[in-house]
Length: 253
Image (cartoon, rainbow, N blue to C red; front, side, top):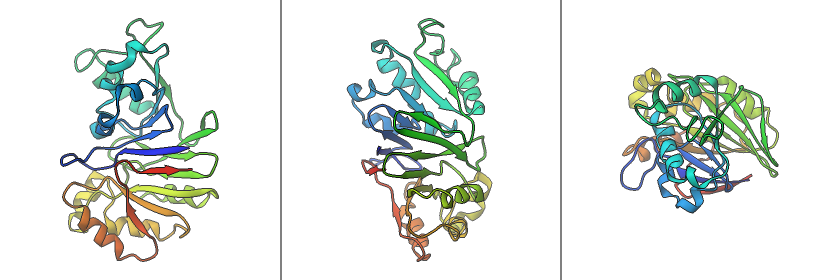
């Protein structure tokens, strides 16, 4: 499984793009502004999109992806998400007011978009690849994903704050090679991190105290302009080798 980072920032500007992973040629995990780095030919090959939650920085480019290539595809794009996220997309996004309802266009029998509800903890297999929604703790219903390839697994936190269940899953996954975990704020904004349900270094370090040390920890969703400060505060915790995810980076599992 080849995981390419299209966007991993908590904002935009100066080359930053919001969250999206391209998995092999045919799968996306989240649909933030990182999609704008792809050509139409590459976009046309996307058959599946796994969403963590319905905040704009994670779904913003989904309508444009469909609008750009749907008429050239023979099959709908399948959006995998928990039911609460699908309900938001139906009510507030693909609702004819903000964007046309691609779940019934061009016809209900042959739409551009198909929804596939997910259940937390139940794997979805696509060939040799496996995607399992895992719990996230955010201000809206949300999940992360355990992505398993032939070599091992990558655990993506999605947007979350302190989340013991996530780290229990990490430690119970014997083939886990990498964790991609958000850390949005510096400790000076601890109360903002708590109220918006994101990690800051002290909250993350407290949770990662239980994570085994043979797993590479990648930091994502850093707020623009605060990246260096967040990483400096994380570096105080010497138990793990914290490295920032980078746009264009490829991780293979």
